[in-house]
Length: 105
Image (tube, helix red, strand yellow):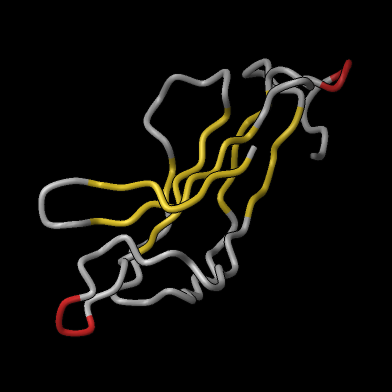
């Protein structure tokens, strides 16, 4: 986390810094799809700061891959509380719903 902004380490928005996150890859994910005809999970990653109630940010979906490589551009979060936590969830899209494959905090 890097501090930005005006005197006292706060920007005009009240942020004390910016967290930059890059999602690179995942390996050996559990297949939560049917597996019929070689179909496997279609993973993507969502991420959200615990204190912020807006919609989570996410990577693109990688179709039919249990070892996806995203190499995402930096995803930025303004930090307002030094004790905040980032939650990441690896999800998969299925025909009628979304399923969580893995998560981290």
